[in-house]
Image 1: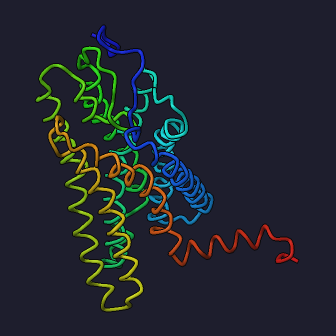
Image 2 (image 1 turned 90 degrees about the horizontal axis):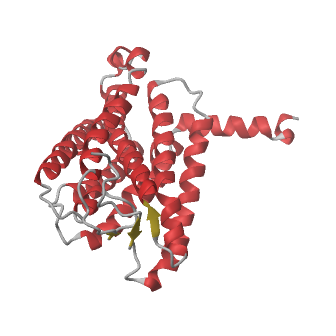
Image 3 (image 1 turned 90 degrees about the vertical axis):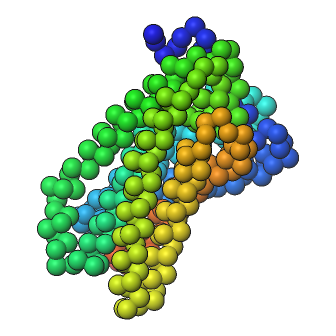
Length: 304
């Protein structure tokens, strides 16, 4: 049976925020601003990624992930917020579905690795170069592959479900629990797979992140409070990212609480990718120095 089975509609209607039409212009402006800031901020970090240490290698991957993830969702969201046409083709929905879930799963694993690298750099400094050696960093594509394989299994099982002519998705992008709501068959197997994948790619990494940052916070509180504030900011953004995903994926697929889920999904699709460059890099002394050196090199008055 192919993905485009006989019961699949030619287009999906993304209802998004159509129940609150007065809110759509405001959301369009906010999402546009956040989207531009996210793309520009993450692109700047990639441009200064010649700082060859493990953390900056991870940061480059994170920035590329955030750019790709937002591009898979936000342009369609802006189109739907701008005009009355709130549709996406079946093929477009499938592509968005696969890409966004693949990148989202990969980013969850990457954030956990970055938190451990930060822990090793601060709490186990003498062992950091051994723990995070370049060969281990180059093994990062394994997380991309793991996210891809898991996504291919879960997404394919979901897209193979018969939709019985239903084509209205009560969300602003093609999200797995919402597509399950359109089916007219038992989805218990799909839900179990979704819960298992969510536990592996969301709950476990979040636990590792909280443990790592907990040790870091205890260490830096003894040294300087400014760094402790940075750690708290990182924990807040990470918790926002993982918490919103947990809300969406670790509740029954047939739940009716997805109206507030639309607003919560804005955090992990738009707000978190915008904040990552600020939290992880722009406060970092080495990155600020690299940005300053690039500006000095480009400014002829400074060079003269």
